[in-house]
Image (tube, rainbow, N blue to C red; front, side, top):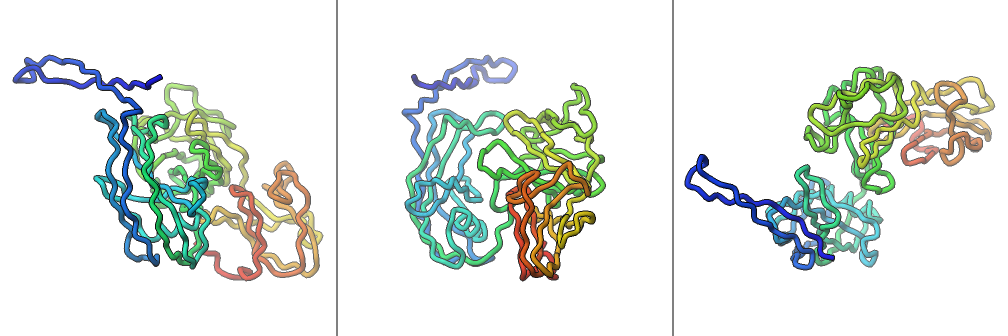
Length: 367
């Protein structure tokens, strides 16, 4: 069955606005008639931090109707058939693609390429028709040809914000500045569910919202619905609306929250909340917590520990046992064995990783 999208096109039938009449002409989107985009050559080479941008030309998709179109550049290692679904942060407009060197480097490493190595990669350009809210219609997907290029990457640490799709948590805690905000991440590449830890300090109750871009747009400006009942204090779930008139979310009052936001249902869910996360059990002390710091840039709790002899430990919230984590970041999991040594302990509850790093003990935490 052919998919048809009817678009009303206004035709002027008079010399002045006062005397014009509107005539509706049906334009049809026919998938079999779509002309896919064509991706031009991408010149590989050595990438350097702050080096020259990578550029390429492309021909725009012809959908047969006048419509907004979004484009995404994908990359994967050669021969992987784009299984990684790795997007490249790029400026794509008017037949020209521009990728900053750091963004190309990040995309190649995220796709599985090694650091400081020659990475043989494949690229393709994907387009979608967009609705009046700017959202891409998945059923209108059109893919370009595949272009190969080899780049030599450089060594850099990849922040979560550079690795995962994300939404912004913007509020009083960061001065309502998108540049200082924290994020919820699409850790599992679902395109709809975003989660993670947010450190509000003492300002959660002062209100916050979610946005889909580093700015304000009614199509992805998510807050409370003033026409609905106000959320209860510490609500486990809040249904949001997307509107410039949406209200600030002000029903939370602790420091740390693990939220999940479902972009398809606009539901914000609270997995847990706490005022502190600590290490317990170290060196046989199951009564006193080592309170951990939080690094929002790297989305991890951290603390330095000195272990004279082999021991065990766990992580817990607010010096209690209602919420605790063990081996593999499992809630209520087994005790974590720790060999003798001096370590910086890292706990990332979004990516569910625990690391003990000897070389970071006593060092400044990177921000």
